[in-house]
Length: 287
Image: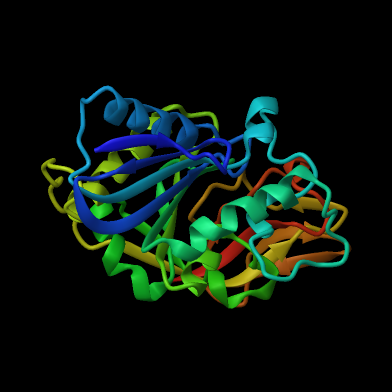
């Protein structure tokens, strides 16, 4: 087993197993205010570099994606890095910005891997969940996460994320939302989830956790894009809030959003945290 720093990509470490096997890439810190994943991969890298764990086969590449934003503890500097993994970006994109240039560095890793995980957290979340294409749900059940969110790839407005880009080039990819931004138990959630998948793929010799049973699956059907003024309606909104048909969800611009069916509210963000034109929440059906 060899542990290597990438000579071409800052913040990337590659671990090579003894034998041929899958190429795994894990991103963390794509948003600088989501440090749990970065701490988790640092702990994992320490384990391998100190000999506490051994990679039996394949390669494992660990990446601190948005290092500048991580250092400044903010979501991003100029652009949302997790919307820039595209082969063609909008004309309004500042192509001299750190995030744009960083995306160009990282895209080859997404094109060349077999499996891809990106580790995030959410501003309002009481428990971890996975964002994954429906066809890949079974592939990530061994991670032990109870809630899955699908349907992300159906919306053009959500394009440019690392998971979607990796999927486009043939990888089996998912996004782990390890919990709340401010809850450091997300570190152990992300760390344990990665170990479970590496064990499932036969890359480390750990015991798989017991099955957590059949997961709950939610499919996004509407994206709420922030307009001004904006405010959530009713009591404080939480992730996976059940909203009955006809209930008012938010005031968005000069309109009130009212559900036309029973729905679940996913990943609501505090209004002050999102810019106008960015997604601020999602409506989903439970499958």
